[in-house]
Amino acid sequence: MGFAPASLLHSLSFADVLNEDTSRGYQRRINSQHSLDFRRYIQQSGSSTIPLTFNLRPQPAGAWHIEQGNSGCVTLAISADHKPMAQVDCQHRLAHMEDLDIELPFMCFIGLTEREEMEVFNVINGKARGLSSSLLDFHDAQLATDLGADRPELYISLFMRREATSPWHNQLDLGGTTTSGMGRRASLRTFQKAVHQFLNRTKVLDARSIDDAAHLILDFWGALVTVLPEQWQNPRKHMLTKGVGVYALMEIAADLFVETPKGRVCDRKYFVTALSDFAPDFDWETRGPLKGLGGQGGVKKAVELIRAARRTSRLRVVGNGK
Image (cartoon, rainbow, N blue to C red; front, side, top):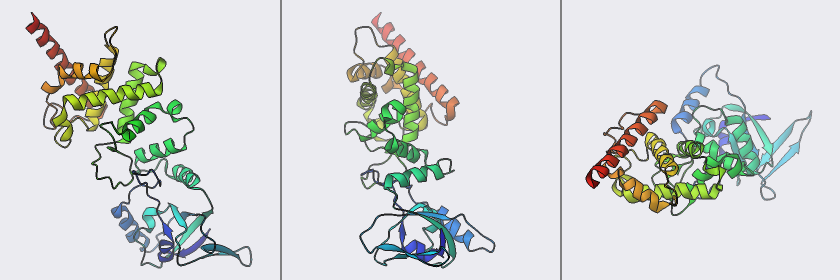
């Protein structure tokens, strides 16, 4: 533990922000407003802060060393050509402090691995307000030894994000940064909560493997995009990828799975057939019947509306048949 000017700590450290394209790093995206708020606060009389937390990562010889001093004190000497201090818990406090020489307390681990850094970050920030729950979920996935058994809904959601044939490929927001240019449509946390409900209702994992369940959900969303291509391509104007839409559609997926006729395979072809009977006639626009629905009550109402549309479609088909 020690003290140093904010400008010096800023110049010698870096934030390892999660790169969603490579899955390297673990920090959230920078929030400039949050950082500027701290900059203004720390310059006020009587302000204080808990120690900034760093980790000295292994570096080439000569990048940094510790010099023993008197009375148990030491000096951390760092080459001006290196930035070996990873910002484990101080990213936003330091982001806009490059020109301020205010003395700040800091603590520094020595030689933690990136995985160990992530574990420390999770312990410190696991309950932090404003921190993306999707980012913490992604950390859990990186740290898990058997994710499929421990958190099947997270396993499936990450499969849907990584699978190249998935409509959700690179579309679920993890809370990091990306250069892919793809517009994120929903958060990882939203999608996995919807998957969790699907797994609870269908009990599919009682008889099938986690990978079978993942491909079942892949088939459903692939079928949905086949049936509703225009609505999927215009997410801002339609509810398919909004929270209430994702939750409601996974409930419909559970309905279709449970209702699979005996002897019929529940696959993409089955989902296309079932969805095409009613989904194109339902108004999925943001100004339609699902407008303003949110929370558990909103999801329940949305499911009721979609199920009612499906029943009406069935009656129409039967009536025409007669």
